[in-house]
Image (cartoon, rainbow, N blue to C red; front, side, top):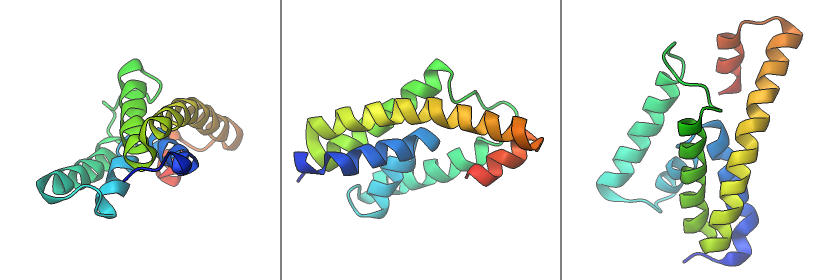
Length: 124
């Protein structure tokens, strides 16, 4: 049962979803909070996201559909952990983390001169 006192945990899960949209739901699945076929689907989708994100066709994390997906996944995870307060905290953390993570990655690329795909692998 969600406890609103766990909103900091929910915010951290939302921050995880800012890096990988399915990180939060995959964490729930790994800890048995999502069970049965949905669990298998979420874990499979998380693995697929990790692999497909390296493809040249992958959209930028700050594109509206990507941000929306990360915020929604964070909010869902936060709600499971801490109810409505957790959903709000996780959604805010996912949105902020998405923008901050994108900026940090660009700074690493610009500062080190490393190619973006190399930094992306290190980010994972």
